[in-house]
Each structure stands twice: as structure tokens, then as C-alpha cells.
Amino acid sequence: MVVGRGGYRFQNWAQTYGSNPELYFQPTSVEEIKEILDLARQRSKRVKTVGGGHSPSDIACGDDFMVRMDKMNKILKIDKDAKQVMVQAGVLLSDLNKELDKCGLALSNLGAVSEVAAAGVIGTGTHNTGIHHGILSTQVVALTLMTASGEILECSQSENPEIFQAARLHLGCLGVILSVTLQCKSSFNLQETHFSSSLQEVLDNLDNHLKSSEYFRFFWFPHTDKVSVFYQDPTDKPPSSKSNWFWDYFVGYYLLEFLLWIRLDFIVFYLMGNKRRYIIYTYSLFTGFLHIFRVCGWCAGVFLGAPPYIEGVFLGAPPYIQGVWVSF
Ligand SMILES: Cc1cc2nc3c(=O)[nH]c(=O)nc-3n(C[C@H](O)[C@H](O)[C@H](O)COP(=O)(O)OP(=O)(O)OC[C@H]3O[C@@H](n4cnc5c(N)ncnc54)[C@H](O)[C@@H]3O)c2cc1C
Image (cartoon, rainbow, N blue to C red; front, side):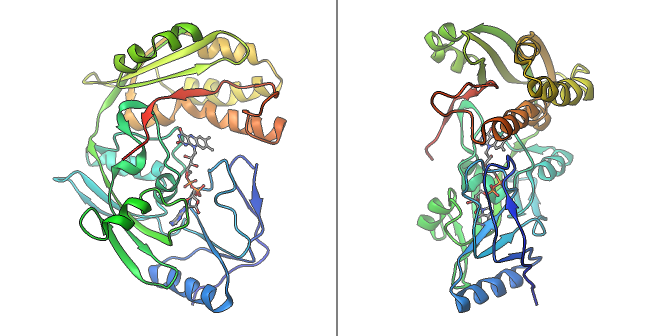
């Protein structure tokens, strides 16, 4: 029998929102999730399911029952021919990416962090960039969910198609997602080209930039006209050695975090504005150097107590701008 824990304090990753659920569960099976929902119905409690807890809003907070899916994190099936993977809802993309890579597969697009769960990223419409790419929900070809009554629904374009469409961007309010099947592609390497430009130039030529690279994004350095532009494009070249722990973690994470902490933002901007060009495995490029985003989120929480886009507030960290199709 599944046991809920009292006295648990939930906080999202940036520590901007939290809640004190009455009972906190970490189920290990579908049967246990059903037990939790049965109990919630008997006691008229609301159930909130949590993945990686990375949402910057309070969307994962809840006061009644909280179900953390971190023990429902297995890869259930990899179909190499169809290039599809079926996972339990709580699997972290950081684990999934590694397993897919071993099979010569990869997700075609990822968000900036990978310590997020499969059901979590589709739930909020997580996206990266690239005008030929949709949000991560568009990679979902099937999913299984348990409704509040304990019924299990298989959903895809051919089975429960309307629920499938809604559940691909469920916002945590369509029952508990149990498993997700994602369309992958053959693993690929990306070459990143990084250069400085002005905000005006990028805005004037936005269409060209979007078409010039498969994955285009830019950082705007607040209160200046400076931007840092990133082009990332598939390549057959092997990963270069330029990406390593020193740059990705020591400089890209710990040093930048320290500089931002002591408010030496201009050195951060200089380091980030340097021209670089390197090739790296897909999933680490999407999520590796971009540890700076963690720093941004952390700064926002510590210094402002809120995300850095409030009117009249000084932006101490560069926001990044991505382009992606949001419909599916
Ligand atoms: C540093 C950082 C960088 C980020 N970068 C990006 C980015 O590049 N692009 C982008 O689009 N977003 C980005 N985000 C936002 C993040 O990707 C999303 O908030 C994503 O939803 C987080 O996934 P999660 O597993 O942590 O979800 P959670 O925050 O745990 O949950 C998200 C929602 O899904 C629900 N949920 C979770 N699991 C289940 C389940 N099994 N069944 C039913 N409902 C469930 C929750 O109740 C909640 O409503 C970033 C966030 C951070 C902190």
C-alpha cells in the first residue's frame, strides 16, 4: 500500500514558488497511482503531479495531495525502426538523452535544461528554437493517462484523438500522465557558430536569421544594443574538443554565477559575447553551455524574488530569444 508523507515542503527549481502539500507521494507503479487517486476521491482532495519541478510559475504547486513521478522513470520501449521511444512519465530528459544516444537516436529538439521530466515538458509546451521545429509536445505520438476516476486512457491520433490533442499540452490538469511515446530521429551532431551583433540588426533581419540556421537564437544584453547570436546546424563532422568541462561548467556555470553574484555583469557579457565555433553532441549542446540559464533563474530568484521581466526592474542577466512554431 502506498504511503503519503506529511510535512513536505515543495519548491520549484528557482525557489520562486512553493507549497506545503498535506500528503506527498512518490509512487512506483500504476497501481499505486490508482490507490492515491482513490484516496483523494474518498477525501475530496485535489491531486497535483510533479515532474522535475522546474516550472518557473506555481503550476506544479498544490496544497492537498502531491504526486512526484521521479520513481516512475523507466524507458519502456525503444523502437529503432520507427525511431520511437516509450517512457514512463517521470523519466528525466537527461537520462533519456543518454539512452537514446546509445541507440543512435535523439530528440529533434530540446529545451535549455534536461533535468525535466517527459510529462512535465509536454505539459507546459516547452520549446527550443528553429522555425522548422515545433514545441516538444509535437514530438509526442502517443500517451497513456489515468483520469481522476482511475480509468486508464490510451491516446493517439487514432485512439481518443481529442483527448490526445489536449493531453499533449495538458498543463497538469488532465489526470496523471503515465507514459509518453516520443518520435525521435537519428542522432546528429550540431555545429555552433556564435557571434556578436546589435539588437537593431537582428530585429531588422529576423527572417534572414531564422532561415540562416536550423536552430537560431540570440541573447540580448539588457540596457545595451548588444546581442549574442547563436546558429546551430547539423553537421557530419565529429565533435571537436573545444567543448569541455572547463568552458561548459567552470566558466559557463560556476565562474559566471560568481561574477553575476558579485554584480560584474559586464565581464559575463564579454565572456558570452566572444566568438566561438564548435561541434558537440546534440543533447549536450542544447543543454550544456546553456547552464547560464540556471544562473539567470537563480539570480532572478535571489535578487528580485521574481522572474527578471517585471516592468521597471533592472535586468541583471541576459534574456534569450528563440523562434519556434507554437501550434500543432
Ligand atoms: C533553468 C530553466 C531553463 C528553462 N528553459 C526552458 C526552455 O528553454 N524552453 C522552455 O520552453 N521552457 C524552459 N523552461 C521551463 C521548463 O522547461 C518547463 O517549465 C517544464 O515544464 C519543466 O518540466 P518539469 O518536469 O520540471 O515540470 P514541472 O514543473 O514539474 O511540471 C510542469 C507541469 O506538468 C505537470 N505534470 C508533471 N508531470 C505530470 C504527470 N506525470 N502527469 C500530469 N501532469 C504532470 C505539473 O503538474 C505541472 O502542471 C526552463 C526552466 C528552467 C528552470
